[in-house]
Image 1: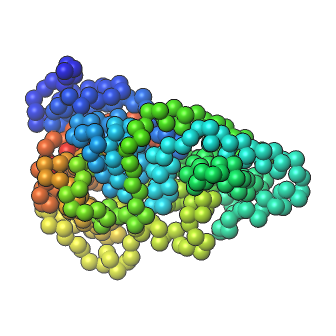
Image 2 (image 1 turned 30 degrees about the horizontal axis):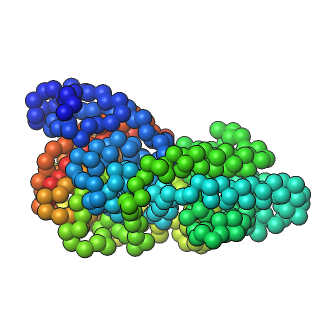
Image 3 (image 1 turned 60 degrees about the vertical axis):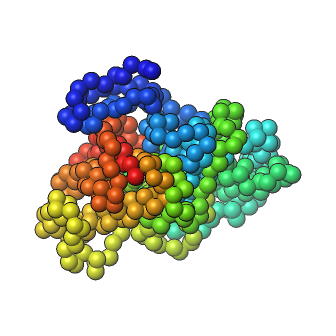
Length: 444
């Protein structure tokens, strides 16, 4: 048994403890403990395949999985995002189910948890590289052909330089070589891997700000995008991700399965009652990250956003969305928790729309809690990592409200502690910045 790094009495706020690397499953973290976890693994193995906003760092789900489940058991992430929980479950020889309403999140999770034969992957990459060399040498006819592989979407000239669209079209066109290169093996997983490599460079070669929460063009940045950039970055990304895959394959137990249902929703989980041994998730923040708009260009290039489909339609499905109808917030809504209702009423006097968004967030989270309760086995835990929010200059103590919601559903709050947020992939306005996440351990 390792010596615990924690001191102080349970229930009161204890001094900040810095942990470099893993939290040990043998440690009992005191209630209200504040931690600063220095992650060593944010880009380790398939975790590094693609940037993702508000991303789980691996050490927290790794701790929860090893502490609250055993090998061969089943772990659920009902809001999977970039698939961090399922990668860690796989490495720990647990089966997992990853659910998300976002098609990009589902694709990324599948790619990050699918082990590929490195020698076959090398053949696919070599076939695409050969096609791209031919494109570079092909002159005007090759460039015209590349345009036939550029998907239709609005404002192409705003988001991309014409020469970048040609290069992206050439890469997409080269994907046709994958089927023959990997035969007789199924090409789908290899093609999806390469699509994620393409997606990983999209923001950088676009005219949009690389690090903004939304896909926007900021002329004051004077962003430099030059001919050949998309081809160069794609080649480098495939090289780096193939190396990560080579490292991942021998560490991932062959028997650990990952299911990513196409019809999944955290509020309507497509699983039978009492089938999960543990659930771990990091829910979206209230109105903090607009995932469909963050990945707007990537979804265009991956054919995940049908032409003509309003972006708001995809955004409306997300928990914490800001896409609401005026009819929804004409009247004050009450949830049934005194402190929450008082805060929503205070916000309603300032901003009716945002008051409704806060109210609806907890309605949706209760639906999720009830679904997770249904699919968990008795005595199992639901580990929720959530940040508080600042709405109209009011701090919304999301973690405190969620503990009350959990108890209303039937969970017992076993413990809770804080994890300081020290790294943001995306730029968040200082007045809205979330400086710590809260880890809630709920027991059925």
